[in-house]
Image (tube, rainbow, N blue to C red; front, side, top):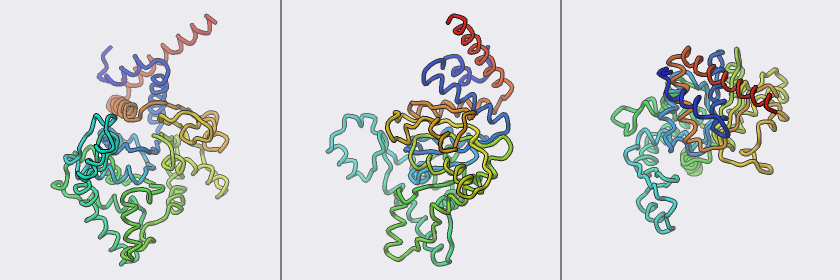
Length: 352
């Protein structure tokens, strides 16, 4: 039956087993949470902005499918780079066969390779630097203190259309800034502009205190979480591992044990990562481990998709955007899929 929801129908029909099943079930549960009035908090590691995740993430933010984010400093700035320097990027689809000499030539072209694409230094880093550094120096002169992302929010909103090389509708940073979404950028020092800021602090041109600290980010997250977790609660959608995920998910046990305040657990959890489960690996840890840290409970819908997020996430977001456009039809598609799954499980039990 044609429903006008081709991507959702495709997932419901074809994604039956293995990581495909996990993708389908995580998608359905995400939509369940939205339909119940819940919110979703995203944690984004890796180089997803360079991989142009904004093509689907920006519309998802505008559609109310994303309600807060934790991102690396690299993802934050690279979303901006894609907006101001998109046409100046160079792609290298045959990067697997490069020699050291090939990469040296890329360096000499003033390009910074990220897997199969590259960020242009002059059109991206240096162009943004001319706008951002004066913002820091003014803040220093005026004794202002702001969160790292607040400088980027102000910058991206102030940009004129003639400064865009990329499509502004595909810039997730611009969408988040316009919505004023709660955002944390843990470990922002570990980014190109974190390094640039440090250099200006070293030279005495900027005060380190003009950027609020990661500790202050967590203090703000206490308040953000209290708002986001009202009603049907807030879920946690994680791409990759590392600090982008570990920092925000800890807000629940910190509220409970450090502040001794009541805190609802995360209402949903999904991690998309190609990290394999291994000894001591946070990125490869199973969700059950988070129960022991009081971040999730045994009743939390939990999903792990061991796959490439650049493939999985745009697919999930596209299906969710279809759901937003026609919720009743989406509910019907999902119920048919679940009904077929229940019959299959019943048949399997009888056969056993």
